[in-house]
Length: 232
Image 1 (tube, helix red, strand yellow):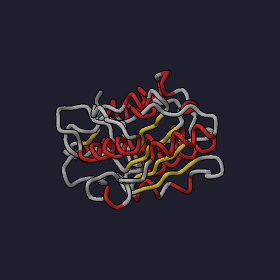
Image 2: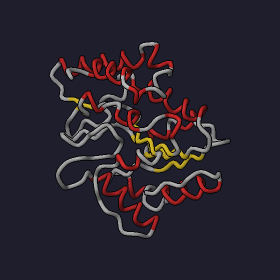
Image 3: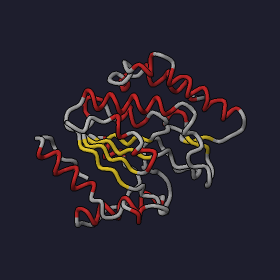
């Protein structure tokens, strides 16, 4: 697949997009314009992550009508080879990205059990967790985190989050880091739970991510609202 615009067309033509394609941003050109901006970056010689066929993987794996938890990060891993279209997920050789290591550390401490540290989080998506970033692409490079935050993705992810808030009952929104927390106003907290904390990055995990117990909080709230808890 040659680019993000072509990947968008393939997504919209596939059955996996059925619950998302009626969102206005997919119909009014907003997603297409963001894709065009990313393709322009690639044409200028920048390497972009994730691969085009993976940039909508979070939506392809998690239908809107099945979302029970949203984990919202900032943008894909900028380290070459790390991003796979699911926030914080990683498929590659050891070692795991440090943010993911910290997520597993908090998960183990929160649930008081040993954690098998497999970098691929697609099994969470199969259980009702939408692994979304505020930007769906990034320039690859160790110091390039946040490089695509202003390429048009804000409008796209705002629409996704607003649709979940409006259409779904009793969803847990985990907002990790300042860009994710800036989306809080999109969530109707009269019917949903927001768990906001620092980002799990090594630069900030000690400032409120560790000890936040998001996984047990999410399951306790889902149970109280007669929803199936997540088998983390």
